[in-house]
Length: 287
Length: 232
Image (cartoon, rainbow over all chains, first blue to last red; front, side, top):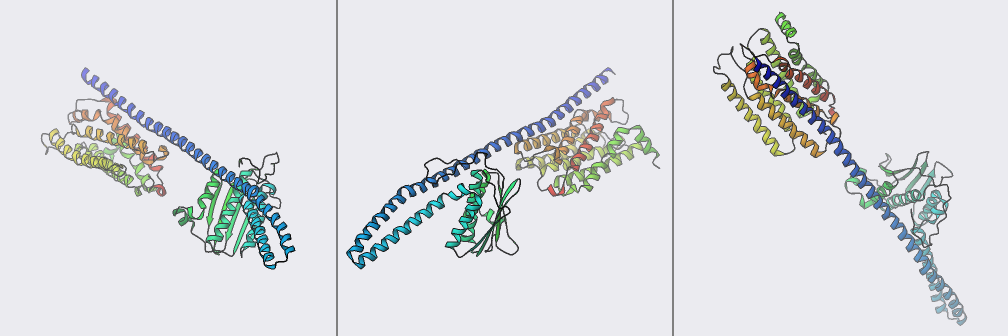
C-alpha cells in the first residue's frame, strides 16, 4: 500500500517536472526567437545606415567632382579661351589692315570657332553645376532646364506646379529632386521616343511630389525591376531617394507612355538663408 | 438510451471533456479552412480519427466493455498523423527520412508490443494496454517537436511565433506528451480488468493536458489565415 502511494507521488512529481520542462522549452523558444529577431533587426538597421552613408558619401563626392571640373573648365580653359579671343580680335584688326580677304575669312572662322567653344564650355559648366538651383530654387532651375532642352530638341515640355512660390528646401533635397527630374527627362528623350513631356511639381504640408510623364513607347515597371534597373539609370534614382527617405513609383498611363512619381518628405531650408553658391568657388560641397 | 453514457460522463467528467473538446479545434479547422495547409490537413484527420476512437471508447466504457484495443490501435495511427505533419515542416531531407522510418518502426514495434503485452490476443475481455509503445510514441513526438523548434530558431523565418498556427500545435503536443511520458508505462499495470492500483490525481493529468492540448490547437487554428498559408 505504501509503495503504491510512493509510486503515485513519484509519478506526479516526475510528470510535473516533465511539464515544467516543456513549459520552459516553449518559453525559451519564444524568448530566444524574439531576441534573435531583435538582433537581426539591429544588424539590418546598421547595414542599412552604413549603405546609406556610403551612398551619401558617393553622391557628395560626385557633386564635389562635378564642381571641381566646372571650376577647372571656367578658371583654366575658360580664361585661356577668353585670352585667345582677345588675341584673335587684335590679330583680326591687323589682318583687316593688310587687306587679304582669304586671311580675313580664316580669321573670322577662327574667331567664331573660339566663341562657339566658349559657349560650349559655359554650357558644360552650367550643366555640371546647377547654379540656378542654388541661387533661385527648384522651379527656376527646372524652367531653365526645360528652356535649354526645348532649344536643342524638337520637344514640347510642359511644367506646372501647385504653388507659385515654391518654398526653398534643404540643399540636398533640392539637388536630389533636380537630378531625378534630369534623369527622368533624359530617359524619356533617350528611350521613350516621345514628343511631349509633362513635369509636375507638387508640395503639401508633408510631401513633395515630382511627376514626369511622357507620351512615348512606355515600359513595364515590373519587367524593368526584374532586369536590374541599371540600364535606365533608375537604380541611381532609387539610390538618391533612399538618402532622403523618398520613394519612386512607375506607372503606365491608360493613354500610353510612362509616368514616374517621386515623393520626398518636406525638409524646409534652415532659418539661415543659405549663402548662394558660386559654381566656381574652390570648396568641398556638403549636400 | 444514453443513460449509461450520461452516467459515465458524470462519473468521469475530465476524461469525458477531453473527448468532446476535440470538437472545438475540429470546428475551427472547418470554419477557418485550415485544411488548405498540408500539415493542418493531417491535424484535421487526426482530430477526426481521435474523436471517432474516443467516442467509441466512451461508448464501450459506459457499457463496461474492454476498449483497450482502440487505445492500442490508436498509437501508431495517431503517431503517423501527428508525426506526418512534421514531414511538410522539416526542410532537411534526413529528418524527413528519419520521420518516415520512425512511423514505420513504431507500427511494427506497437504490433510486437500488443503481442508481448497480451498473452492471449483472442481474449478481448482481458486485453491490456501496451507496455512501451505509448512511451516510445511520446519520446518520438517530443524529439520531433524539439527538432522543429530548433529549425525555426535556426532559420528565423517566422517573425511572430504567437500568430504562427503550427507553433501552438507543437506547444499543445509537447505539453500533452510531456504529461504522459512517465504515466504511460504505469497504465499497463493500472488499466486492467481487475485493477487494484489507484493512480489518484496522476490518472487525470494526461486528460487535463489533452484538454489543454485541444485548446492550444484551437488557438493555433484560429490564427490560421488561408491567404497566408503559402508563407507558413
